[in-house]
Length: 219
Image (cartoon, rainbow, N blue to C red; front, top):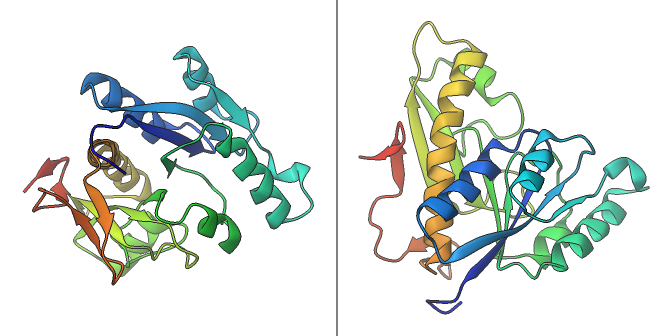
C-alpha cells in the first residue's frame, strides 16, 4: 500500500469493544490518515455496537447461531466486511476462532490483539494462566492472524509487571490499559503504511526501532 493513501479499517468485536473505542479515538485525536469505516459484531447485544452507532460509524451484526457451520458463518462475515472495502481488518475482542479460508482471504491484512505475551499463554484465561505459572511480567501482543491460533507474526507487545497481590481481575485491568495504548500505536503505523512482512514472515515497521511498550510507553 502506498504512503499517503487514507487507510480503511473494519473492526470486529464481540462485547464492550474498548479496544475498538481506543482505535477510533486514536485515529481522531492524532489526525491519522485512517478511518474506522465499520464495526462488525458477532453478538447481537454487544455494547460496543451502541458506542459505534453513537459515533456515527456504520455497524453490522453477524450472529454465529444463525449459521449451520463455522464456514458458512465466516463466509457471511467476510461478505459483511467486504462491503466496506477495508485495507485492514482489526480483531478487537472478537470471540471466534476463524476458519483457514477466512484467514487466507485477508492474508496480510488481518490483525488481532491477544492478552498475553505470545507465544506464552495462547487461547483463553490468559491472566489466570500467568498467575498459576508465577510469571513476573505479563501483557498483550498485537499480531498478524494466521491459521494457527494466536501464533502469527508479532507487530508489537505491551508489558506490565505482575504483583504478588494480583488476581486475574486486577491483572486483566492492567493489561487492558496497555492494550488500548499498543493497539492505538499499531493503528497509527498501519495508517502510515509502515508495517510489512518479510519473506520469512517477520514484521518490519519502517522507522520504528522499538516495538515493545512498558505500561503504555516506549522503553
